Every structure is written in C-alpha cells, then in structure tokens.
Length: 98
Length: 135
Image 1 (spheres, rainbow over the protein chains, first blue to last red):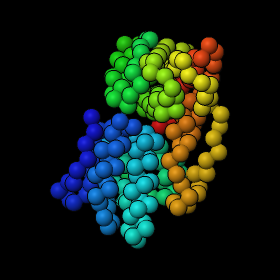
Image 2 (tube, chains in turn blue, brown):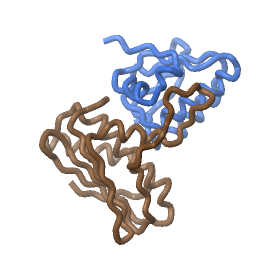
Image 3 (tube, one colour):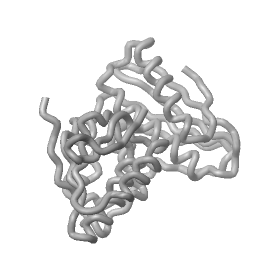
C-alpha cells in the first residue's frame, strides 16, 4: 500500500512502501510540484532503488530551478539506503525523532 | 517455500506477503526483513526488465539457514544474465552526474552476505544469503 499527497503543512507526505510497482504513481505526483518541496517520509516504511530514482529525477528538476527536495522525518531503514547509495550527500535530510 | 510469480511489478505486493508469512512461520530474525525485501525486489525487477524474451513465471524459494535466510530466484527460458558482478558506481558523484542505473544491484551486493549465480539449460538462478540485517 502506498499513497502520496499534500499534508496540512503543505508538505508532500508519502506513506507505505515505495517500490517499483508504485514509482510511476509517485513520479506523476512529484512531476506536478514546483519550487522548494519538503517531502515528509514519517509514514514511509520502505524504499527500493525505484523510489531512489523518483527522488533523484525530481531533485534534479527542482535544482535546475534553484530549489530542490528536502527530506524530513526519514526512518532509520530508509536513511540506511540513502547512506549506502550516497544520497545522504545529495539531499538535505532530517531523521525521524523517536 | 517455493512459489511462482508472474513477470509483473504487480507481483511485488504478493511477494512481500509471501515473505512476511515465511518469516513468521519459520521464526526468521525480523531484523533481516528489510534487507531481504530489498534484495528480492531488486533481483525480481531486474529479471522482469531485462529477460523480456519469455513469459514464464519466476520461481522464488526461501529456506532458513544457520543464523539467517537463503533466497533463490530462478528465471526460465532466458539468456544468460549475471547481475552479481560488482558494479562500478560512484556514490560520491555530484547530483548532475548521478543516475538510477545500476543502483538496485549495487544495493543488493551491499546487503547480502553471499551471492551466487548459476546458468544452465536456459535457466538463470540467483541465490543469496543474508545473516545480518544491513538496513
């Protein structure tokens, strides 16, 4: 189960599992976003390389307009994937506080 | 556990369900779960994306091993394609030079404790073991 939508704070919130089956849904939503975008991952349990591809493509597009993606409330599993893939050097990341 | 799955990304959710059932039934260490899910998805997606000449289902097998789990994925009636060769990915490259390509298998090789590729009679089989959760 995966969902993506704006939350009450105007952030983009993802929930569930962002895998290869859900990447197109996430990409279609994020393709409509412009300017500085805060992606709230508090309720996202899992992300594979397909999800990393979505973040990378979106971040590149937004950075070309001098903004970008900021990732907040990232859980430890997903942060580990960011570290292994070097994404921790590409994104502004805030971890989920327990 | 031996189970066949159709060559579709729609099968990722049923694969996750089957993995969940196997972990509970065989009392596998839950700390291995995310690493196992990631490796299965990346290798399954690789087979679906690159072995396009067949419609045969992909076999997923799981067995408990001492201190962990062994997982195999077998693709039938396909050309040889060994994804286990280490990929040269520069994770320190700047954003403009980064691409998604190769990242899935790169992550698999980081997650597993061992991985083995076999090819015979047009069957492509990848077997990996995970005994320590990396993520």
